[in-house]
Amino acid sequence: MKKKIDVKGKAVLITGGAQGIGRATSLLLAEKGARVLACDINAEAVRSLGDKLAGRGEAIVCDVADARAMENAVSRAVKSFGRLDIVIANAGIESVGSLMKLPPEKFERVININLLGAYRAIKPALPHIVANRGHIVAISSNSILVPYPTAAAYAATKSALDSLMRSLRAELVPTGATAGAAYFGWIGTGMMERATADPVSGGLLRAMPQIANTRPKSPEHAARVILKGIEKRSAKVFSHASVRVLYYLRGFIHLFDDIGITRKMIEILRKEWQ
Image 1 (cartoon, rainbow, N blue to C red):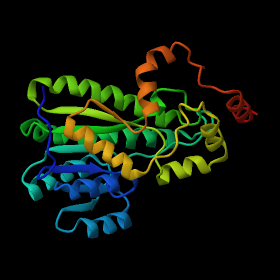
Image 2 (tube, rainbow, N blue to C red):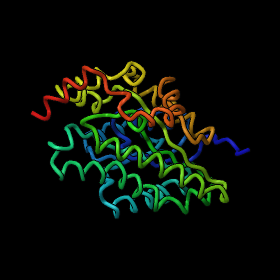
Image 3 (spheres, one colour):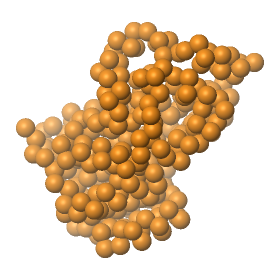
Image 4 (cartoon, one colour):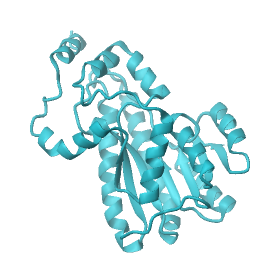
């Protein structure tokens, strides 16, 4: 049985750490006594979080699309805190638009940030995580469980992160370090607001079957889920009970790929092809 993690005194690197789920998680971990290095591309959000973290961590401007910047962020965490125990690959952006209409550069940017950005954060941190028998968590989504029209790029990255973390967890078994993923439904963040505000993607999200159309949870709730997963070294944690149910039923659900497409969704999608 793996030893649980007490985050007090542990050093944490979190990407996308100054906004939404990342900000809430950075503050919660700092409150619990962890030393936090929050990386985010939004300079204003970084300044705001830095003021909140004063004495308990740092917030820096950092782009997960830049491999050298992420290597420097890992080095900074180790230099500032003397160690690195936990990595939270949280940075992500949404894709709104059907595959037909989404420009290639936007599709590729989602892959670059959500998937490769997570890799760029995890890769240079691995020697430290292994040395300290730490934990790595990436943020996945219920989009891997049911069809999410107009979010193909986003869903693809979250499915990839699911597989990445499962493979990495297996690789880490001999070391005593661990890895896992957090599977979230609707969380009340700016990303969710933008997706629901779009007439097509928002309409599709609201037309999804009730089990997938989850009630929004707060970023603070998501942060508590992440913390619980770290403490227990969980392979998977869930924001909603319905997401947990979908996860364990997904083999059955995937036998019927169109099962989640409602009549109302078909009406909305038909307009995309006109």
